Length: 442
Length: 72
Image (cartoon, rainbow over all chains, first blue to last red; front, side, top):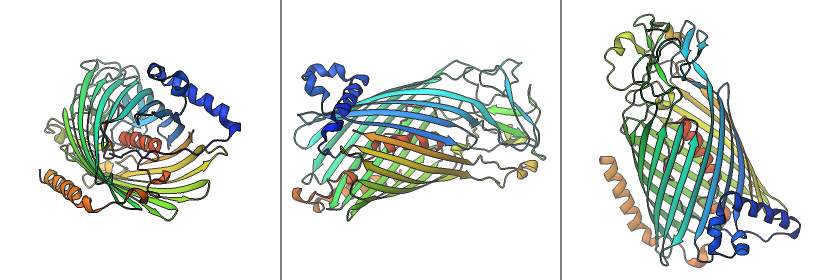
């Protein structure tokens, strides 16, 4: 985990002071800081908050679009403790792959609610265009010293969207040594998730039914628990270089299926649709293990080059579903007097889960075992991001930044085990997305 | 288990080897720069975590991996 370096804000000019003060006070009130105000005088409590407001626009080509505004604020108190709050609103709409593979025929699918259906033309990736959700997330943290060389960081968050609720707590202990050149940290966290899919929880590996037929749905909701341990070392190497190494272990138990995803069953020879129980095709609901154990090894190097700085990180992740992944990230910040530019590249690659299939043949489906998914996020894939961030200061010293990024995701479009007509189509739903973010810090 | 052993050994070596590294308190001018803070773009990182959590099978590493999101 990364340690916070205290930052000293430059002095402000008077002409923006009133507006800035008003914004800071409003932010403190909006994020519920009033309860803690009793511990301090009203005037001093509302002064000194450092606040970021940001808005992100995310647009996938022909798929999902999202708008995500964020407000976060934090204050350092006289005893060196720090209190922070963050509010996120996330609004999504658009179309998402439902897991079924392209076919040489028109395909009909039932909407998750069981009321109504949608069709996908021959040769196209089936997309459920009813994806619509709004998420509200609130989190806070409190950091305080434990003697001269130790500190604790406590965190909590709640998040709610239409079909999902999540609440989590975390605690991190940090110990400095070697004249504060080394920091060791140990963190634990727990998260409770409540999943309540539209239309109920599909019975795994049963067929999607036509809207006019009884649906193969079971309970209305399910739960999942996630526990994590994160240990880390942050080391100052020299005047210009910092290194971080973290190891993370997480275990989640409970409902892991994607209730909105299915797998196509195709003819052994032709690769075309197989007549289902009530639909013209056969589509099996997602089925995953009810436990997942993940490990991650993360390292980061930050180094100054004159007035500039570079940030290089690498993450290796592996889990007991058979997935391994590698993530590389490099950014370089070129500093000028009152502004900077920061180009960035990211590359990610992952192997597929043991139970991932782009589709299954009819004979395969009879001996498929307990688990099956066609969720592209569990497939073998690779992605790359390129971006540019530009930051500048207003006359009173407040920071603005604009970030533009392009994300491309790709996978095995023509797998060797494609059957018949499947060889004519792309079996991985390639994704292109654009990200725009504006941030103002005051 | 082999991977775990590797992780533990690596961390031990790092900690023991770190005692000879570092700077004196008066040599922290560059490290104290805003752009040299490890979390100098916390909001960007949080946005990225959310996006990649919803599009890929991996999460966490630099921090906890829980997403508090039903997107994956």
